[in-house]
Image 1 (cartoon, rainbow, N blue to C red):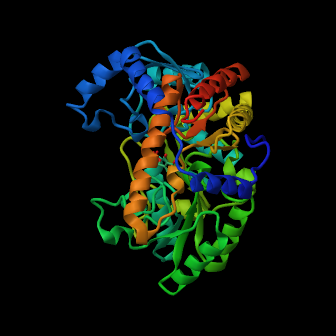
Image 2: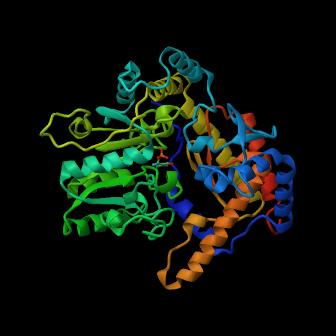
Image 3: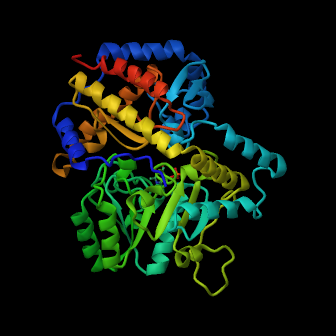
Length: 482
Ligand SMILES: Cc1ncc(COP(=O)(O)O)c(C=O)c1O
């Protein structure tokens, strides 16, 4: 089976480069260049600006997704096709956001769209009753991922993480959940804990009672000794129900893990009687059809799905794994049996199941994961060359079609509670710099995820990537001191 990762990264080398980046003062786009980019937005994107100004009166902040919140103002998208997005002013952008990850085939792929339209014409998007595509999708996932003996489709990654944790607690009778510091597993009460920067615990948990995160613990990313320390400590406090991991490392491998990390985590879960949950919301069907678990050859007890599982269509979530565990989510379970309660009016609709099934089929038919991975390699190698040629401290690295370009290093600030004011100021400064890079890339015709993450797709030909590299270089030429 093919995977998108050609060569596993040298994790130590990446951390060495990131640490060198963080030791230097932040280096951003020059003030003059940034002012020119902002002016260009006003001129070229006036329809977007007017619409967002109006939307702010009706929608908080004007947009509904964190991903859509772009500096100096969000763009309004009118058309999406293959590697490109087009805004309502008619400007074209190379799309490395990919809706946050789902569109591995490129935007709006005809082969999937045709099948979804056929389905819509026959039965509409939802009926509340069973549709054959639900079975077709579950069988298709099991064919590629043997650990997924059974599968239940849900409405989002967030819901699926909630379900996985509930099942783990019910099955083990334990309460503690261990995550990696900095990782994002959706926005349920218990998971808004140590987001982005390890050690920040409840920094973002506004409106969430302390009791909700009482059993959430964190281990340092890519640090197996830290994971063992947490598991050992939890043993004295009632035990760990599950360790939940993104197998490439927190934030889609922004903090990458060493190649052997997942295998060691599996061993520790067995030693301490905890379940291993892989959050493959991003990696399932992007790293390969076998997921990151296939690539690393490590079998989790439970896998959480999202994004590509519905091919970019709504209702993108699911949980799969050992039959004895997933059975606890059975709808209409016999009374007297203890069930992990879950639901969702529009979960597992015919349209999400069909879109997921035909997307996976098309990925397999076209070798899309490998193609997207080749595009990611070309992009990353190109960025590394540009950075080296200009003598900049920035770091470009990738895991197949998931690429990272760290300029501001906003997530790599070390938390120091004794200097908390200084740290908070630095977080604010670096976050602003990251937003400015995102704006500069956008002004040059490239859409990124928060100015630092770039997903490639099978639609990214060599010509698209080379065009993108020329655009990135124009931004790098505008960095202070160049
Ligand atoms: C690793 C990971 N887990 C969970 C989620 C939550 O998924 P959703 O946005 O579908 O709720 C995300 C979303 O970006 C994610 O990246």
